[in-house]
Length: 238
Picture 1 (tube, helix red, strand yellow):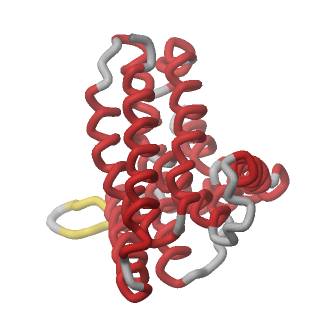
Picture 2: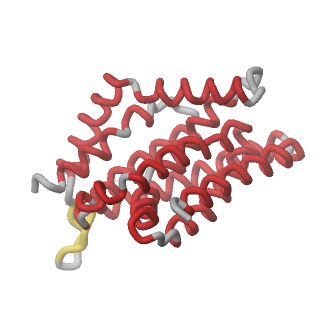
């Protein structure tokens, strides 16, 4: 079946959202708060580990920095471009539409949960590489593994942040499905260096998602998404 990996991933996220909404109310407020912080800390460290892998390397037994210019320019120009395009506004309009169509118009937490969860499960090399493999060879193994991880993350987020987290299945279906459809066009661009840069900068954005969860800061992570594209372009300029 075409795009089977994306379908599995979408169903896993939707199911996690459904189960989280069913059983989340059984948790006391302090339990939900604890789960929120736990998921935020986990996302923080996932982002930190990937970012440090791109920023540091061992040379002669010592840690030395690398890719600092790529890091700064990608985030700076990518964020500027994202702010001009106001990408977060696109996510918000989709979230508002889903909130109304799903009968959750009175849920004040829906939009924040949707944005946080969507960025968590859409950003990263695993989504792109897995979708390309699925489109080119029908191998959905990587997306199946991602589905297990996403199921756990979205279940916890739905229980702690609200129903909106489960609706992140929609942007995952759109994004990964599009990559699968365009796999033959995208595949030549995904060199080893391009994938390394994508993972590096994507990890930095995942860290920002974690910051928003743990400290309730409002970093407009969606508006930083073009940084990933700049990182990929950078790989062809060096």
